Length: 201
Image (cartoon, rainbow, N blue to C red; front, top):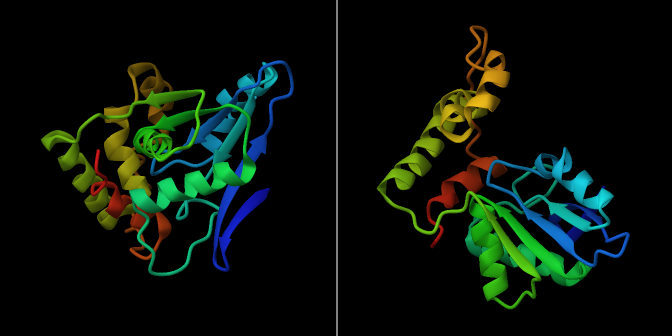
């Protein structure tokens, strides 16, 4: 486990492996709000490393293993700034910024603020927030306030996953004994979610 220290109470958890072969690219994975490094390291990261590419995955402040001072707003400016600082610190060769959902916005903003990139990959990243997505963003926060991540998974999964995944994983959702507990409003994920809808796309 590696940590990039930003301040006395602030750090970013990251997993970095430089290129190992004749492939001089480093794929930099930028999470969705509710993601973490694990989502990249199951299949995508290992496949790229097996092909000789480098990979860098990290968690935002507010996500697993990263730390943050109290009172910070985990907004677009903070997360993009953290990404820039981490890339400047590690200086991975020829980074390809790969952003999932709002992670694509953070990657784009880092590039526009001067981070060199060999490529920019946007996965399910929107160009503009309209009434539907704005409603969903607000719903996400409200659902978390009422029933936490368990309720969120049960409600939102059919909207974001395709039929093959849903058929394979249906038995893990909407269980009779599921306990829905409100998300702690002082948690990092709640902080990230509550600022997500304020991002300027």
